[in-house]
Length: 336
Image: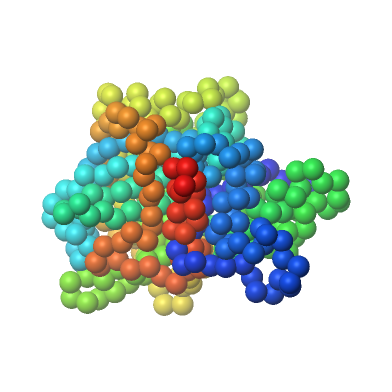
């Protein structure tokens, strides 16, 4: 079985340490927190370290615009950006892996990523971080590390089956993730994104629901043919979105898929049925590329647990691990 190395948006909050079952002969690496090991392995897989770049989703472009909440958004949550006023937003689109110059249509550059920062009053902000696939390959940081390490160990291995094939043979969620089709989008403006982690949303009346974000392009999902993918320029997505917003704004609908009783809210590998109710939270309108995008994006760490009143984290281990790994990568990016 030929497996492409397909690495998703890096997860990473609580300081999760290496599994205690490892005996006294732990290597120095195994003694590190799992979140730091994730960053180490992603760096190895990318041929890094690449100074000044993220350990995953290194290649990207940042835009700015506004978010206008939908009329029914306030009935879902009392979060400030879901009320009446528009909020300024920063949005970063990205390719997977820590390779800073990976071609946009390369098979390893998937899934694509989107990070959204809603800028609130008093200098506050709240973030969304999502990917272009509606599930994650692992339910825990330890399993995600196992997948990445298996990919790493397979690079120069002659074993049959290879370490990654062995891992996928015993981890159906990871197998599903790496074998899910990941077509190249015509544009970031035509690529849907999905929040694989659930959050708890509470309105002013104290009513709560769990939901997952969906970020759907108003232009609709559009993908390249195989021939167009093979012929695509290395930076076609980055160039296209910059050219598009020079001519007219690009819009997305921010939706929330609502969990029903019995739906798993703490496991990012489980995709909820399409029959689940979705509520429109509002419209993202992107108007321009940030003037100093390359420099600006290096100084920002998007954090899915940077939340505001009315939105709370679930207990999903992947969600709760993400900020810690992001912080490790961010510190290295800044040379700390």
